Length: 269
Image 1 (cartoon, rainbow, N blue to C red):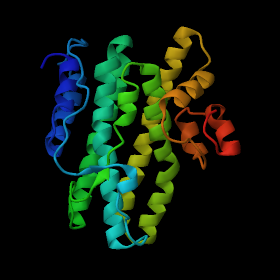
Image 2 (image 1 turned 135 degrees about the horizontal axis):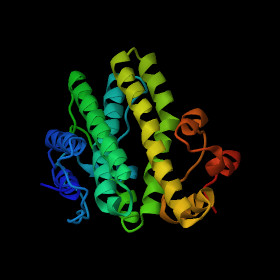
Image 3 (image 1 turned 90 degrees about the vertical axis):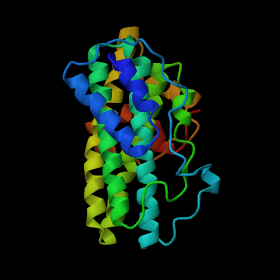
């Protein structure tokens, strides 16, 4: 592979989790070394390659995790988080491979760094699962995580608005409480991993916000109003409080974007 688009597609077409992690890390190293041309000469696949396990289920068919704090519940939660990070590898590489040609090189710099982070996060959680006597694929996983990518495949503004600025920003909101749950259960090993992920995810949301606002400035449009409109049209879930205002602020996602939601807890009209 000689171009960044070829490298991104190689990640997306790798199904086996450990190999996807290796392919993502190799792409990031080759980009940093200047070994990949800033060229978008191949298309991204409609869907990435994934392993046969975990079984993917709709949200209403996902099994209960068990009593909060129990070993079974903790394994189930770590497995769910690992799946999120696994899909996030593909989301990052699809972002740069699908849309990088419309932006300066810095766009690829940011999103390939995000992809390498997500690969590292998945590897940490997968190793933690094995330490807990389980492994990735042992339990069912949520089937809907790629829906946001499919919904926004033709619109980079919508992709930036929904994936980093809604989905990853939600991670900023819920991760501190998740860390507290593991700490309360005496699981400091998992809590340390989640602390690291939270720190990195602030940067990821920041990358999304930066490039979203850059595109808005180029088009001379107000970012907050455009964001609300795009989320209303392309996000199938509900955006609601509580919000981690300090983490969002650190990522540049100010309350001007979501203040109305914090007030009434409703999604956009």
